[in-house]
Every structure is written in C-alpha cells, then in structure tokens.
Image (tube, rainbow, N blue to C red; front, side, top):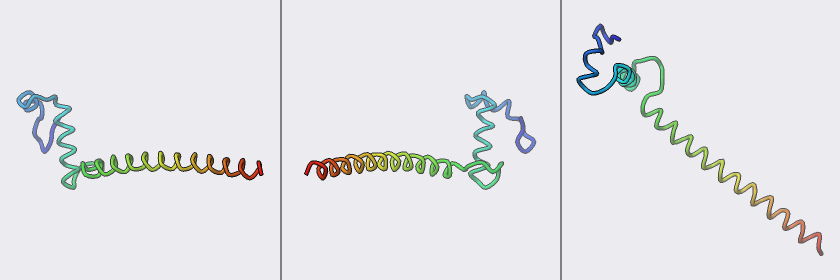
Length: 83
C-alpha cells in the first residue's frame, strides 16, 4: 500500500495497527480535508446517524399517534352506536 509514494507496511506495527486500518484512517482523513474518493466525511457520517435516529423516533411517534387515533375513533363510534 502506498500513499504519495510512501509505504504503509513499516508504520502499522510501530503504532499497533494493521496496514488496512491505517489505510482506512488515511482515506477518512483525505475525505475530511476535502480530498478522497467522494465518501462521507466524519461530520457527514455523524449527521447521518443523528438524522437516522431522529427518523426512527418520529416514525415511532407517528405509529403511536396513529394507534391512539384509531383507538379513540373506535371508542367514539362505539359510544355513538350505543345511544
């Protein structure tokens, strides 16, 4: 593996990681600093996680509201029917 003509192989054992781990770190750094292969930056990845979490919470809330609405509509229908 190379980066700007340098070999990664001697460095990983010195810092306690594999060559693949170092390659991933370098690629992520390139993305974060405006270069790289067009993947998500660290900030974009974090924002995506936040949006996915918010989306799950909103879907859960909508489901609860939908169920409550159906419950109260049925209760109202039953109340009117029994008159």
